Image 1 (cartoon, rainbow over the protein chains, first blue to last red):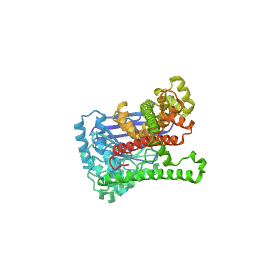
Image 2 (image 1 turned 60 degrees about the vertical axis):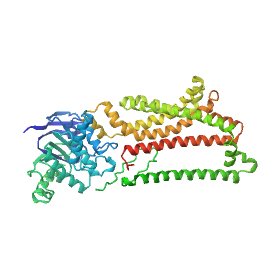
Image 3 (image 1 turned 60 degrees about the horizontal axis):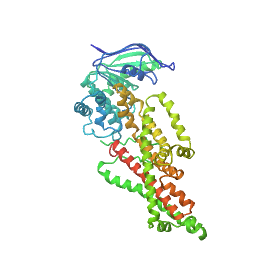
Image 4 (image 1 turned 90 degrees about the vertical axis):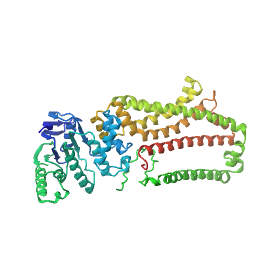
Length: 243
Length: 294
């Protein structure tokens, strides 16, 4: 099994002296969906910025074996002046893809996230959930080997959030990228992932690495099964001991 | 699925005039457009009516008949000037002259102001070095500078345009810079992750994000360039006559009817320039953010 993303003893100290991460080791293989949970300010987002190359490590090493990496931000981060379709096209446009090709792929990605018919709508005309779908379509259009998610559903209401979780895990099943997902919702972590990594409060360290056994697709009702509750309990306990 | 309106905070905090329109079906768009155009014209007409009412009240109720020449009634002002080609002819020529100066000055200020802001936004240190010049330009009273410009450049078209540019430049620079810096850090990260070039970042992110505030700057600069042109006329009596020059002549001769007509013409010109840019603003920004969006 190829390991798409490997973090080996990674540390990050900011110029201000804040130690965000301290000796974090973590790997994500193709077909794995790893979720990182931890208290606020434990360096979860820093972890993603390092993995994506937006920031440099101050200790340890990061190895990325992916031809294409995509990143889904906390906010949808859409360009307000572009239609949904042209927002999804942006990555191809910046990388110099031919227009008919990138437009066709953008359309496919929008269809995939259930936004057929909304191509021409501008972000302000879309609901929060729909904006996040456009954002996910923009990430998937590049056919990423590695997909990074920085608490993408944190700002959504509960109902939309649960539906987005269901949709994301079926997208994961379909595309089979290596996924690294940041959240502070334990139930979201357990429902979505093949493995839950628990981090301690600042400085961030990995304190538990808990495998999730169920195969995909996972029905939404799984959230109410006793074994689901047992696993979220285990994750919560690991969180509670170290936060 | 209902499209919940996500009303992002209006970008033009300086003017605060852009309405935040709630979502409505596209079919109603045209009618709503007409209604909102009517709703915008209405208060303006009411304001004009209010000014006229106060004018007549002062003329007939405040001023005694022997002092009434200070504010002659509107119908007398219009009656003695508008029908008289010996007064209206030179006045309209002068206004045309001033309009030419104002629009030329505005065009130059727009190009220079946007260019200056684009250069500043390239690096933090460039902004630190260049921004104080813009502030100094803004803080020197234009009235203090204008006579000097006349001495250096003569009293023709180009000196008047320079006055216009100096007065209209700062709002263009400041608003464009504010707009170019308005794209969020996550949007910049998105461009970084996709290995965007500096030009791509400027033209596909910063510039489009700046468009609403560039229009705010344009509206302010347009109003100021009218003032600049009249200030130039007023100081530079030699050379080409402008409406500002006539204002001075009428004042010295105590030709009150002509003076008031000239003032009304300059006010109408100012309102016209402002309205054109406000309408352009609404049309372009409305299109830019999608039909039905604020």
